[in-house]
Length: 260
Ligand SMILES: Nc1ncnc2c1ncn2[C@@H]1O[C@H](COP(=O)(O)OP(=O)(O)OP(=O)(O)O)[C@@H](O)[C@H]1O
Ligand SMILES: [Mg+2]
Image 1: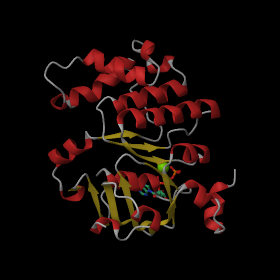
Image 2: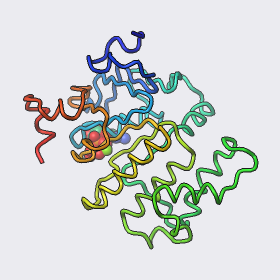
Image 3: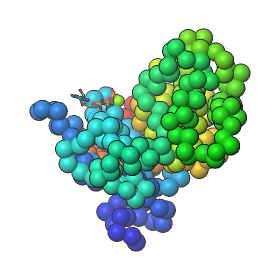
């Protein structure tokens, strides 16, 4: 057992998978509002980890602290062996290029076509690709992954909400991230469109072997895509385990998540 696996729950101790992201003792308050009170978690390589928590429980705050968009009051975040709080801006930018975000609401740039939206992150990170980079091929490949190659010349306003979400997912994928952070990927979508997004997320995971953190309120999404899940309650990792195990819990705080 490695040092990093010692403190974890029984089912994870059995794995010899590499830890790709680890959070230790994360604290974050806004005045008297103590949002995170010593949150711990690990993400294993190739895993899809679902994080559930009530609205306002600190899921988005946690994800922002995770990637250096917000500074925690205390705690450590380690991504691919690097302590992100110790990184300078240039190193942080470099590391962030390996992390794809699908943010809550995931807005596309309204004044840009779908192509321009996808080219945007590419231009910032040209150095990641060979010098004979063919931008158009990368854009089309990313859009093909979400089944929307034919929308390349459209404006976001010409797309439905579900299509916009898929284009945002394509934009996330274009830099071939090693880790994808999804903050509410299915919120605001009807159940059928939500299911399409869930299937796409699974396909991406299989095709690219990415590791993912999925923040969601959607029990269906958690059941289908999550290899494992964490319940964020009272600012801590209240319980981690497999969907089935958690969904059968008699603990009222846990049961509340599974009432549909
Ligand atoms: N920049 C900020 N300044 C002050 N308070 C903040 C800030 N960001 C978040 N908060 C507070 O932190 C708490 C957690 O917010 P967060 O957005 O992380 O919730 P969440 O779990 O993502 O909720 P939801 O499921 O609704 O997205 C809330 O009480 C929120 O008001
Ligand atoms: Mg949120």
